[in-house]
Image (cartoon, rainbow, N blue to C red; front, side, top):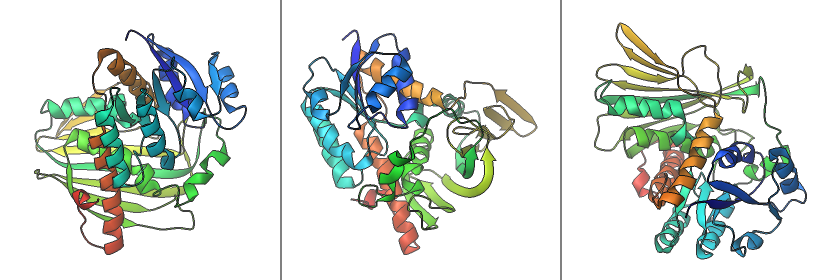
Length: 354
């Protein structure tokens, strides 16, 4: 296949970040937009300056033989049935993280992907974010020696300083329903961090967690988790603070992130991701009395652009893109284990989440 015709299924808030990378790819055509809300797909087409097929029913996408691939930007509870249907219809499938709501659903998706003749991946923009990739490059080169601690620090602010996205508040209502959404920030945001941690260091063996529950189902703040990596003398920490009266410098969401990898020779610091709070280079390598800075592209949308590139290129090159079903399942298991650890106030093992 020399060119890929993709259908974007779900034209809500996050499509504003996911779709530009497909629009820029020279071998990709955004052939169709699908949304069951009348007029939404048409508005996105106008926003992006394209004239695609407009569909309001997913079956229309599945029955269109011109559609090679689908990007599923849908609520989590729809990931399983839509992935199964798209694979059955012979489409390549990119499904947004989190993969699904339960381990049994993940197993169904993995089984369907293994039988399909097309590609399946779960999209996580963090795995393509240039500062995170630069940190991996430095870590793999031995720049800080053997890692012994990985830390993810996030803070939820009250608002974003310079919003570039037009947000539809109604599109987030489903997230408040436990029947449709398996968890809050530990779930939906956390999988980014678990996927990054496992890309950097490896699988996670056991976890501990403390989660604050509020009247807002999604807003599990503050929260903290600590874990041990499998077969490594290395720990991971995920902490999420809450500053509702603080404005976050950035363009997309009112969240800021800071990440560290500490090793026997020094440390690597990723100073931003969603937000841009600190006046620091995107990546820093600290080795005692020496600090080296790396000015790599760091706009949050770059991770989404990289994810789009890899999906299209993987189809053309007939290879598996990140993340495959097994890797995505592990991120779901880690999230569920943290909830279990918080509930029982004891260690939980991701591999035991079934």
